[in-house]
Amino acid sequence: MAISEKVSVRDIVVGVLLIVIFVVAMLVVRNIYRNEGLKRNAEVSTDAGNNPNHVSADVKILSIDPVKGDMTCRVEFTPEGNLAKPDGTLARDLKLYTNSSNGKQEQDFAKGKRMNAVETVIGLYDGISTDYPFDSHSAYLELYLTVAPEKKPDAAKPAPGAEPAATPAATPAATPAAAPTEGGTPAEPKKDDAAKPEEADDDNDVALAVDLFASVPGFKIEATKTKESQDDYVGIDMKVSRSSTVKFFSGFVMFLMWGATLAVLFLVLSVILRGRKIEVSMFSFLAALIFALIAVRNAQPAVPPIGTLSDFMAFFWAEVILALCLLSIIFVWLLRPAK
Image (spheres, rainbow, N blue to C red):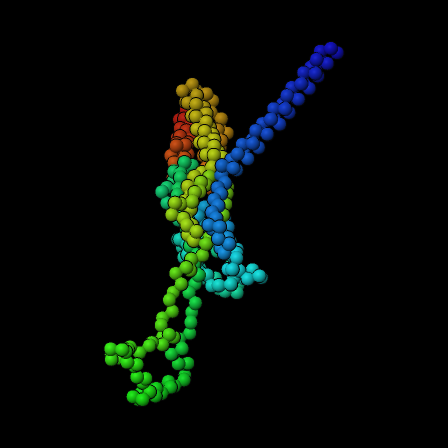
C-alpha cells in the first residue's frame, strides 16, 4: 500500500512538472512569435513639412513574389486642408506619379471625386530567389503628387460643323495712331493684356504625408526614407529577406532529410555487409520515403520551384542516396541465395 502511494505521488509530481514545462514552452514560443512579428513589420512615417494643405497617403505592402520579382503595394489617400471639400471630395485635379513596374505610372484624380486607392507593383532587385531561404532583395517606392494642369477650351477653334467666321478687313482708320513722345518718335502700341500667355504656376507640387506599414508573412522587411525625399516627393528604400521562422523551418526540413537518409543508409549497409534479413516491407518503406520527401520539400513556406540552395544542400542528396539504397537492397534480395 505504501509503495502504491509513493508511486502515485511520483506520478502526480511528474505530471505536474510536465504541465509546467509545457506551459513555459508555450509562453516562450508565443514570445518568440511576438518578437518575430515586431522584427517582420516595417513602419515609415513622413510629415508634410507642417503644411496643412496636403494629402495623407497610407501605403500597405500586400504581397511579395521573389520568383517574379514583384512587390504589390496599396496606397490610400486622404486630402487635407484646401485640397478637400467638406464632403471629402477633391477641390482640385491632382496627378500621382509612381514607379510602377507593370502598371500605370501616372494616375489622375478628378476634381469633385474621392481619391480611390491605387495598387502599384514595384520590382525587386539585388537578389535571386534560388538562394532560398537565405535570399535577400531590395525594393524602391517613390510617390510624387502634383496639381494637374487645367484644360482650357481653345476659343479660336471653331465648333465642329460650324463655318469659320469672316475676318473683317483692317482699315487704316481702325488702327489707332501711336501717340508721339517728347522726342517726336512714335511710341509702341500697347499690347492687349488678354493676348499675354498666362504664366504657369510654379507652385503646383502637393505636399505628401506618407505612412508605410509592411507586414507580410514569411518575410522580414526593413524600410527607410531616402535622403532625396521632400515635402512633395517621397522615396522609400526597402530590404526584403526571409523571416527567422522560415529560415528555422527550412533548416529543420534539411536536417530531417539528412537524418532520414542517413538512417536508411545505415540500415541498407547493415543488410548488405552484415547479412541481415531483408524484409519485403523495406521496399515499400524506401519507395514511399522517396516521394514523401518531395511533399516535405514543397511544404516549406513560399519555396520557389526545385533548384534552390536548400535543394542542393539536402533535397538532391537525400533523393539520390535513397534511390541508390532502394536499388541496392532490391538487387541484394534478388542475388542473395534463398535460405
